[in-house]
Image 1 (tube, one colour):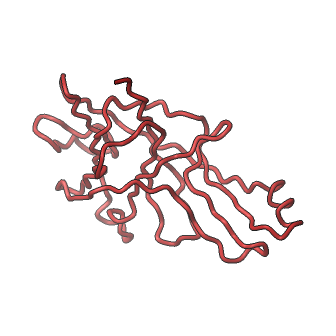
Image 2 (cartoon, rainbow, N blue to C red):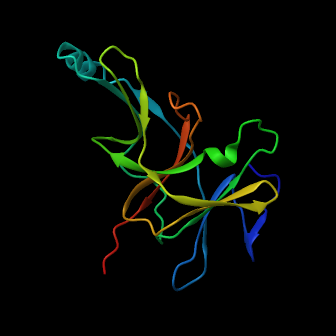
Image 3 (cartoon, rainbow, N blue to C red):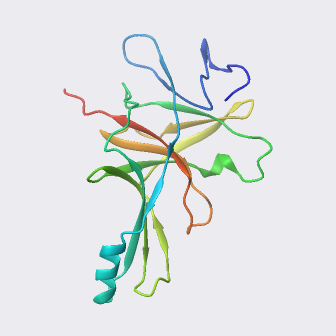
Length: 180
C-alpha cells in the first residue's frame, strides 16, 4: 500500500499500489483500486501422459480461478498507474505486461508453457496487448493500452525476464461487451 495517496492526474489520486483510472465520455473519472489474484499452475498430468504415449509435446498452464473478474471496467481505454519499488534490483517497469486471459471451464489462462515430448525446449506463450509505458513521477509507472480494448478478460502482471518462469499474481479485470 502507498504511504499517502499520490496525485497522478489533476484531482485524481492513487488508491492502491495498482490503480486504474477511466475517463467515460460523459461523467466524472472513475478511479478503482486493483487487487492481485494468486495464480496456480496446472500441469495437465493426464493429458500430458496421453500426449507422451504418441510422442506429442507437453503443455502446462498458469491460471487464475473463475471465468470472469470482479473488476468490470466501464471504458475500453483505461490508464493504469503502478507504484514501483525504487529499491527493487529488477526492472519492474519493463516487466509489467498487459495480457488477454483465455477463459476455460472454470479458470482464466494467463500463460501457456509448451515443451517437446521429452520435457525440453520449454517455451512460454502469452497473448500480449501492446501498451505504452511512461514515468508518472514519484516511482509511479503509467501503463496505457495502445488501442482500445475489445470485450474480454485481461490481466496486468509482472512477467519475469526468464521465459521459463511465471508471475505469482495477476491483476485481473473485465471489459464487457458493449451494445451499439
